[in-house]
Length: 423
Image 1 (cartoon, rainbow, N blue to C red):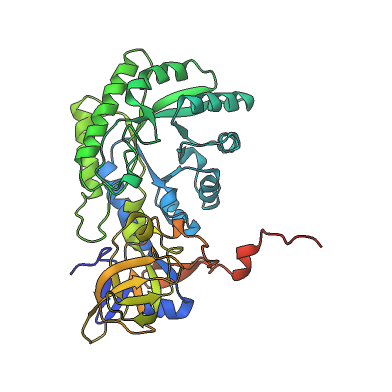
Image 2: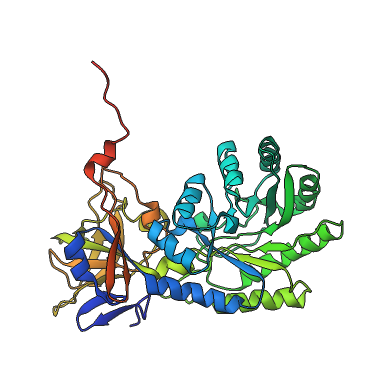
């Protein structure tokens, strides 16, 4: 069976290796829970998009929310990526990682005045605006700071991305974007605001999308709007089609980035829009299969109805299974020559929803190290401190070299900002 993340993730004999580094040895050296990312896998994913986009005006903006580790951002910046951000914290992260603010796009439905002001001061390349109220707020902030904010309007095309409802963002009942039917009037309004410089249109329909149809349907809706807006004399040279391309967790077969780009460029050309600058905002498809979460088996607890394999990673470390019911492959870092049994892989958090995998056939014993695969995106970025548990360490591996890129959170950090009452 091919492992998600191959060829960077592979078996050598009984041992699991990532980018030339034996994973069990990493767990023993740095402790668990431990996130590990492959630089080679990330760079290869970027190259797949970049090669497909070569020769077309474009900007590939990594969606920082997928994995905001500074070293990961540094690798992406050095590979030529811009960045899609949704908070001032993400802005400061990408700047600290060496990114150029002009290659940053600020998305998100709830930007504050302070965030707008900082982004304008830094010189971000654009704002994706999601409501009329936000348009007016950004105009006000820009004028107060003597700036003109470059804006694209994020349009909600009412297209079903056919993904989990929590990560679908392009339907009319989602909170994101300006309704397609209201977008032309919104552009007229934006063009009249002196603090704004309208530069394009944006669209993002969801995440973990595994087929091309929704992308092309959304593109057609967006191009209909572009043609209507430009017929009134307002140019929209920048076309931001968002991200959301899925990865393989188990049996999914999402299109390759090259196939997505080819389909989008062909549709643009067919409709006479081949010269527009194209922005894409991939996140999961750049880093998802590049990462694993390592966790140690603490106890085996056979039961009358279910067998529980209790590990030291919990829902605070990896939330996707608990919040989305997500299926992620789980592999022993060293295979045992013993019959497999069926186990629920569960964590130590005091919630029945604290599980990483259900009904998995594994040969395991206390002290073994398990790897949760495809954990490079929406994993550590969603980790927290529930049950007063410190967040894991992170390691970046590269052709046999391993660098600790985030130290394990010390216990004292859990209450560093708190204060006891006086007296």
